[in-house]
Each structure stands twice: as structure tokens, then as C-alpha cells.
Image (tube, rainbow, N blue to C red):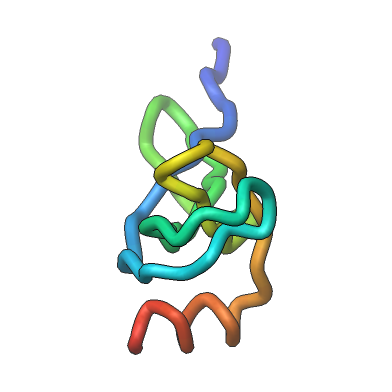
Length: 77
């Protein structure tokens, strides 16, 4: 008997805000995302292992990690 298991990360888009980028200094759209890594068994995701929030500049592509409360505040939830 053998088991097929692993981790799978899903990216969920929470919203888009227009801010000045910390990296390039341009006023551009910043995409707010939530990345959830789940443990999967036989290709079925079972439970979340890690949840991270981030922001990515649409102009230069620089990505930053955000705390959960700041990400939800920026996304407008």
C-alpha cells in the first residue's frame, strides 16, 4: 500500500488598491492576495497548513508580505 500526499498552495485575490509602490515609487495598482497552503492526501486538500497575505505591484512586480489585519483593511472587507 502507498500514499500520495503533498502540499498545494492556492492564491486568492482579495482586491486591488491604487498606492505608491515601496520599490519603484510609482503610483500603480497593488494586488492584495491571500496564499493558503493545504496538506493534500490523494490529491484532495484536507486542512490548511499556512496562510499568508501579500501585496504585489502591477508596475514593477515587487511583492511584499502583509499582516492579516492590514490586508483585510486594504481589501475593504
